[in-house]
Length: 178
Image 1 (tube, rainbow, N blue to C red):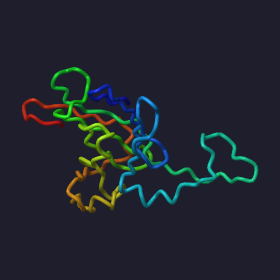
Image 2 (tube, one colour; image 1 turned 90 degrees about the vertical axis):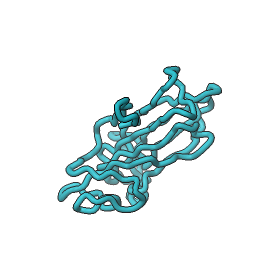
Image 3 (cartoon, rainbow, N blue to C red; image 1 turned 90 degrees about the horizontal axis):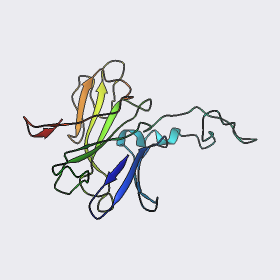
Image 4 (cartoon, rainbow, N blue to C red; image 1 turned 135 degrees about the vertical axis):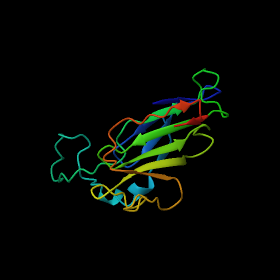
């Protein structure tokens, strides 16, 4: 996903299966930041460094192939209230980068990206997490659906693995992104 800003700044965002949502400089390819969603931090220790990089690729001689753990492997989406319709994220416009965990979890993460990543690191706007008897994300939702923590969580009953590409849009009648 390409994020374009004034002064010809552009960045590339992608989910990856190393626990991070990565943002790269579109000119030189250097990483600007990698965002690890809070609920995945404790699971990073489950990552097996001996696992082959591509599924189906045999490990080198003497290496073992471990159980694959999933993280932030969904493609990100952009919700942008492009007031002047120029395709560029201006600082006075709303812009949100959203990513799901697919098989890695039951949450969507929404980052505020109205400022270029070179000006600021990732800013968590909201997280949408599932709760219920079969899929409770205990880090952010109590079993009754009450959010815990920092007030940035929306709990959705029965939300399963987040395979769908998230979508937000601008609702003119309430003047807000939904």
